[in-house]
Image (tube, rainbow, N blue to C red; front, side, top):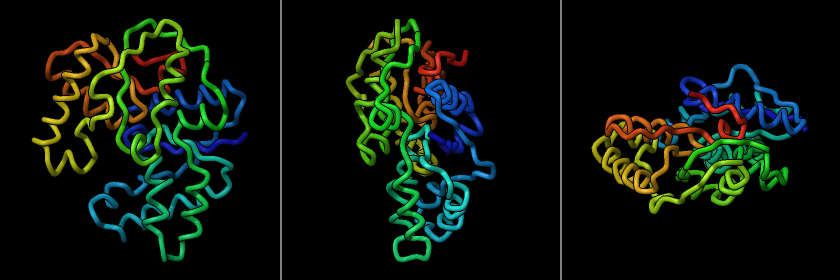
Length: 241
Protein backbone atom coordinates (compact mmCIF):
# COMPACT_ATOMS: atom_id res chain seq x y z
CA UNK A 1 0.00 0.00 0.00
CA UNK A 2 1.20 3.52 -0.76
CA UNK A 3 0.69 5.64 2.32
CA UNK A 4 1.00 9.42 2.53
CA UNK A 5 2.22 10.80 5.85
CA UNK A 6 0.72 14.03 7.15
CA UNK A 7 3.25 15.67 9.46
CA UNK A 8 1.73 17.98 12.11
CA UNK A 9 3.48 21.27 12.91
CA UNK A 10 4.63 20.22 16.38
CA UNK A 11 6.08 17.02 14.99
CA UNK A 12 7.79 18.80 12.11
CA UNK A 13 9.34 21.53 14.24
CA UNK A 14 10.00 19.85 17.59
CA UNK A 15 9.46 16.09 17.50
CA UNK A 16 10.60 14.72 14.12
CA UNK A 17 11.40 11.35 15.73
CA UNK A 18 7.66 10.74 15.97
CA UNK A 19 7.25 11.09 12.20
CA UNK A 20 10.35 9.02 11.52
CA UNK A 21 8.99 6.37 13.86
CA UNK A 22 5.79 6.17 11.82
CA UNK A 23 7.81 5.76 8.63
CA UNK A 24 9.97 3.01 10.14
CA UNK A 25 6.95 1.08 11.39
CA UNK A 26 5.01 1.29 8.13
CA UNK A 27 8.02 0.43 5.98
CA UNK A 28 8.81 -2.49 8.26
CA UNK A 29 5.32 -3.76 7.47
CA UNK A 30 6.11 -3.58 3.77
CA UNK A 31 4.33 -0.38 2.81
CA UNK A 32 5.63 2.54 0.76
CA UNK A 33 5.51 5.84 2.61
CA UNK A 34 5.39 9.18 0.87
CA UNK A 35 5.85 12.51 2.63
CA UNK A 36 4.53 15.13 0.19
CA UNK A 37 6.73 18.25 0.25
CA UNK A 38 5.11 21.62 0.79
CA UNK A 39 2.94 20.54 3.71
CA UNK A 40 1.78 23.31 6.01
CA UNK A 41 -0.37 23.66 9.11
CA UNK A 42 -3.73 21.89 8.85
CA UNK A 43 -5.43 25.16 9.81
CA UNK A 44 -6.64 24.07 13.23
CA UNK A 45 -5.41 27.11 15.23
CA UNK A 46 -7.33 29.50 13.00
CA UNK A 47 -10.33 27.16 12.91
CA UNK A 48 -10.48 26.88 16.70
CA UNK A 49 -10.13 30.65 17.05
CA UNK A 50 -13.09 31.34 14.77
CA UNK A 51 -11.12 32.54 11.74
CA UNK A 52 -12.61 30.08 9.28
CA UNK A 53 -11.76 32.02 6.12
CA UNK A 54 -8.09 32.01 7.08
CA UNK A 55 -8.31 28.35 8.08
CA UNK A 56 -9.73 27.46 4.66
CA UNK A 57 -6.92 29.28 2.85
CA UNK A 58 -4.39 27.14 4.70
CA UNK A 59 -6.36 23.89 4.64
CA UNK A 60 -7.14 23.85 0.92
CA UNK A 61 -3.45 23.23 0.13
CA UNK A 62 -3.93 19.71 1.43
CA UNK A 63 -6.34 18.76 -1.35
CA UNK A 64 -3.71 19.06 -4.08
CA UNK A 65 -0.89 17.67 -1.93
CA UNK A 66 -2.75 14.49 -1.01
CA UNK A 67 -4.83 14.12 -4.15
CA UNK A 68 -3.15 10.89 -5.26
CA UNK A 69 -2.77 9.31 -1.83
CA UNK A 70 -4.55 6.01 -1.27
CA UNK A 71 -4.55 6.63 2.46
CA UNK A 72 -3.23 9.44 4.66
CA UNK A 73 -1.83 8.65 8.09
CA UNK A 74 -1.39 11.29 10.80
CA UNK A 75 0.66 10.70 13.98
CA UNK A 76 -1.77 12.94 15.87
CA UNK A 77 -5.34 12.57 17.04
CA UNK A 78 -5.62 16.35 17.04
CA UNK A 79 -4.58 17.03 13.45
CA UNK A 80 -6.16 13.77 12.36
CA UNK A 81 -9.49 14.98 13.72
CA UNK A 82 -9.06 18.30 11.93
CA UNK A 83 -8.62 16.56 8.59
CA UNK A 84 -11.20 13.85 9.13
CA UNK A 85 -13.92 15.55 11.18
CA UNK A 86 -13.57 19.30 10.89
CA UNK A 87 -12.60 19.75 7.23
CA UNK A 88 -16.09 18.65 6.11
CA UNK A 89 -17.53 21.24 8.51
CA UNK A 90 -15.08 23.93 7.46
CA UNK A 91 -15.81 23.49 3.75
CA UNK A 92 -19.54 22.74 3.97
CA UNK A 93 -21.29 24.74 1.23
CA UNK A 94 -17.97 25.85 -0.30
CA UNK A 95 -16.43 24.88 -3.66
CA UNK A 96 -14.04 22.45 -1.98
CA UNK A 97 -16.74 20.60 -0.04
CA UNK A 98 -16.42 17.43 -2.12
CA UNK A 99 -12.61 17.59 -1.81
CA UNK A 100 -12.91 17.85 1.97
CA UNK A 101 -15.23 14.85 2.15
CA UNK A 102 -12.98 12.82 -0.13
CA UNK A 103 -9.89 13.67 1.92
CA UNK A 104 -11.65 12.93 5.21
CA UNK A 105 -12.49 9.44 4.00
CA UNK A 106 -8.82 8.64 3.41
CA UNK A 107 -7.41 9.98 6.70
CA UNK A 108 -6.46 7.75 9.63
CA UNK A 109 -4.74 8.35 12.94
CA UNK A 110 -1.62 6.19 13.24
CA UNK A 111 -2.70 3.70 15.93
CA UNK A 112 -6.19 3.36 14.50
CA UNK A 113 -4.73 2.63 11.07
CA UNK A 114 -2.43 -0.08 12.39
CA UNK A 115 -4.98 -1.90 14.55
CA UNK A 116 -8.32 -1.39 12.84
CA UNK A 117 -7.31 -1.16 9.19
CA UNK A 118 -4.14 -3.23 8.89
CA UNK A 119 -5.04 -5.65 11.68
CA UNK A 120 -1.61 -5.26 13.28
CA UNK A 121 -1.05 -5.26 17.04
CA UNK A 122 2.40 -6.83 17.53
CA UNK A 123 5.32 -5.01 15.92
CA UNK A 124 8.04 -6.81 17.81
CA UNK A 125 8.94 -3.69 19.78
CA UNK A 126 10.87 -3.92 23.05
CA UNK A 127 11.06 -1.35 25.84
CA UNK A 128 11.77 -2.28 29.44
CA UNK A 129 9.95 0.37 31.43
CA UNK A 130 6.86 1.16 33.46
CA UNK A 131 4.61 3.51 31.51
CA UNK A 132 1.21 5.17 31.53
CA UNK A 133 -0.84 6.39 28.58
CA UNK A 134 -2.42 9.79 28.01
CA UNK A 135 -5.52 9.98 25.79
CA UNK A 136 -5.50 13.19 23.74
CA UNK A 137 -8.92 14.85 23.64
CA UNK A 138 -9.41 14.95 19.87
CA UNK A 139 -8.30 11.38 19.31
CA UNK A 140 -10.51 10.11 22.12
CA UNK A 141 -13.60 12.27 21.71
CA UNK A 142 -13.68 13.12 18.01
CA UNK A 143 -12.14 9.97 16.53
CA UNK A 144 -13.22 7.51 19.22
CA UNK A 145 -9.72 6.09 19.64
CA UNK A 146 -8.98 4.49 22.99
CA UNK A 147 -8.27 0.77 22.63
CA UNK A 148 -5.97 0.83 19.59
CA UNK A 149 -2.87 2.36 21.23
CA UNK A 150 -3.30 0.14 24.28
CA UNK A 151 -3.50 -2.99 22.14
CA UNK A 152 -0.24 -1.99 20.48
CA UNK A 153 1.50 -1.22 23.76
CA UNK A 154 0.31 -4.51 25.27
CA UNK A 155 2.55 -6.31 22.78
CA UNK A 156 5.70 -4.28 23.53
CA UNK A 157 8.07 -6.70 25.21
CA UNK A 158 9.20 -5.54 28.64
CA UNK A 159 6.71 -2.67 28.87
CA UNK A 160 4.45 -2.53 31.92
CA UNK A 161 1.47 -0.31 31.13
CA UNK A 162 -0.29 1.15 34.16
CA UNK A 163 -3.50 3.13 33.74
CA UNK A 164 -3.64 6.49 35.49
CA UNK A 165 -6.87 7.65 37.14
CA UNK A 166 -7.03 10.74 34.88
CA UNK A 167 -6.13 9.02 31.59
CA UNK A 168 -9.09 10.57 29.75
CA UNK A 169 -8.87 13.99 31.39
CA UNK A 170 -7.64 16.91 29.24
CA UNK A 171 -4.01 17.79 29.88
CA UNK A 172 -4.85 21.49 29.54
CA UNK A 173 -2.94 22.23 26.35
CA UNK A 174 -5.68 22.58 23.75
CA UNK A 175 -3.51 24.63 21.39
CA UNK A 176 -4.86 28.18 21.45
CA UNK A 177 -6.55 27.42 24.79
CA UNK A 178 -3.16 27.31 26.51
CA UNK A 179 -2.31 30.70 25.00
CA UNK A 180 -5.59 32.37 25.91
CA UNK A 181 -6.00 30.80 29.36
CA UNK A 182 -2.50 29.95 30.62
CA UNK A 183 -3.45 29.75 34.31
CA UNK A 184 -6.32 27.35 33.68
CA UNK A 185 -4.18 25.35 31.27
CA UNK A 186 -1.44 25.01 33.88
CA UNK A 187 -3.89 24.00 36.61
CA UNK A 188 -5.35 21.28 34.38
CA UNK A 189 -1.87 20.07 33.54
CA UNK A 190 -0.96 19.86 37.22
CA UNK A 191 -3.89 17.51 37.83
CA UNK A 192 -2.66 15.35 34.98
CA UNK A 193 0.92 15.34 36.27
CA UNK A 194 -0.25 14.26 39.73
CA UNK A 195 -2.15 11.39 38.16
CA UNK A 196 0.88 10.36 36.10
CA UNK A 197 3.16 10.44 39.14
CA UNK A 198 0.74 8.31 41.18
CA UNK A 199 1.26 5.37 38.79
CA UNK A 200 4.96 5.16 39.57
CA UNK A 201 5.68 5.20 35.84
CA UNK A 202 8.91 6.50 34.37
CA UNK A 203 7.30 7.17 30.98
CA UNK A 204 4.15 8.86 29.74
CA UNK A 205 3.15 7.82 26.23
CA UNK A 206 0.60 9.42 23.90
CA UNK A 207 -0.26 9.68 20.22
CA UNK A 208 -0.17 13.50 20.36
CA UNK A 209 3.15 15.34 20.56
CA UNK A 210 1.45 18.63 21.47
CA UNK A 211 0.00 17.09 24.65
CA UNK A 212 3.36 15.53 25.47
CA UNK A 213 5.14 18.86 25.02
CA UNK A 214 2.77 20.48 27.51
CA UNK A 215 3.10 17.66 30.02
CA UNK A 216 6.88 17.36 29.70
CA UNK A 217 7.26 21.08 30.36
CA UNK A 218 5.20 20.82 33.54
CA UNK A 219 6.94 17.64 34.69
CA UNK A 220 10.35 19.26 34.19
CA UNK A 221 9.35 22.34 36.15
CA UNK A 222 8.12 20.13 38.98
CA UNK A 223 11.41 18.25 38.97
CA UNK A 224 9.70 14.93 38.29
CA UNK A 225 12.06 12.43 36.60
CA UNK A 226 9.64 11.31 33.90
CA UNK A 227 9.99 11.50 30.17
CA UNK A 228 7.42 11.52 27.40
CA UNK A 229 7.42 9.47 24.21
CA UNK A 230 5.17 9.40 21.19
CA UNK A 231 3.58 6.02 20.54
CA UNK A 232 5.37 5.77 17.18
CA UNK A 233 8.77 6.11 18.88
CA UNK A 234 7.96 3.21 21.18
CA UNK A 235 6.69 0.98 18.39
CA UNK A 236 9.64 1.79 16.14
CA UNK A 237 11.87 0.35 18.82
CA UNK A 238 14.25 3.30 18.72
CA UNK A 239 12.96 5.87 21.23
CA UNK A 240 14.83 9.13 21.41
CA UNK A 241 17.12 9.67 24.43
